[in-house]
Length: 126
Image 1 (cartoon, rainbow, N blue to C red):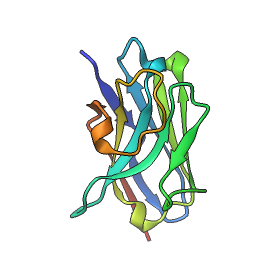
Image 2 (cartoon, one colour):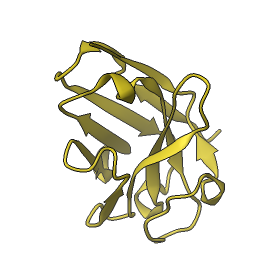
Image 3 (cartoon, helix red, strand yellow):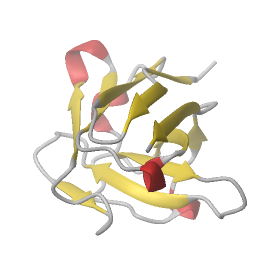
Image 4 (tube, rainbow, N blue to C red):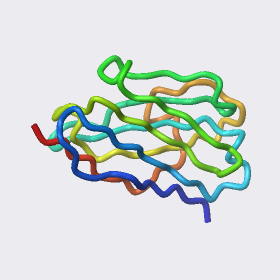
């Protein structure tokens, strides 16, 4: 069964850092575009960052650009989101996602993704 499992969430003070991980049980993980989304209480889920299959190209939401870094280690079937200089408005449940568009590009829309993780809570206190 194909699965994505996030980890690394938690409670951190404003200005602090966290690194989220997303490990996939997908045999062909290295060929799939991946992304991170988040959903704050009372809000719709929004795009955070995306990475192509090779890891050589990335995209970010304007709200996190310069603070967050998405990366992937295909040998470990794992994607990461390094989050620095966290702000209270970054508080949300963070989800990782994979798209079955093998060797596809950067994907920013929810509907472009086929598999989702269960989410991990990130809480930033002021």
